[in-house]
Length: 247
Image 1 (tube, one colour):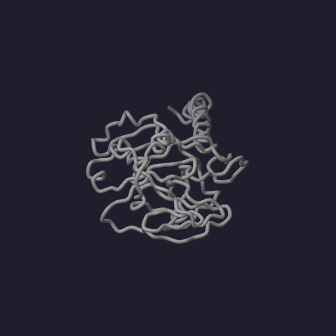
Image 2 (cartoon, one colour):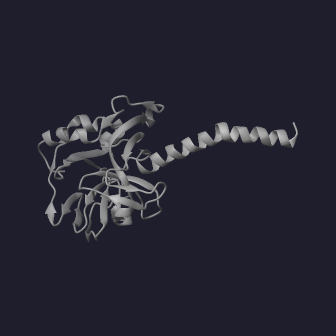
């Protein structure tokens, strides 16, 4: 095949096949960049709410609309609320993280022996429904201390871990304008705002409220069918029904 025929064939492929595929890919990646995405969770920092191996859906339109492939905001119609689970870029190294919003702009956040204080007011803790902690592997469940943290509107599970060094006392710190204080639900095993500081509003990618797929690392990465397509907000009613002790 001579060069002239090769160029003619390549031109036909480009016009008829490749250009259409590239255009379709550009549209798909743009949608993923600015509308919706999924995020894998490789660590236990959000246990027992989100487990290692969960893939969570990220709603990138929850708060604003961004230019595809950037963090530039075209429009904003809402802001993260206390208790939201959000995906954001870490101020430390730009890694995408999944944490819970604990402090809003203007708040004062403090932790005293794993008890949370917001604006000098202690947050209440009640017992956690056992079904929530039973999702964890036996060694993690045996070592953990579980409770329901009664954030207004968003009561949710938290855990502490016996016998490991952790930042159980922190602050008080003031959250500046346009910034948010993030924490993992696994308080003794989470790299969060206690270590890297507050997160600028512009670095928040979106909100997550559901698991689209869950794979069990301890069981040959087999699917956890009971968690697949499950709501992370759906546990609120279970948390609210729990009563009892401080943790």
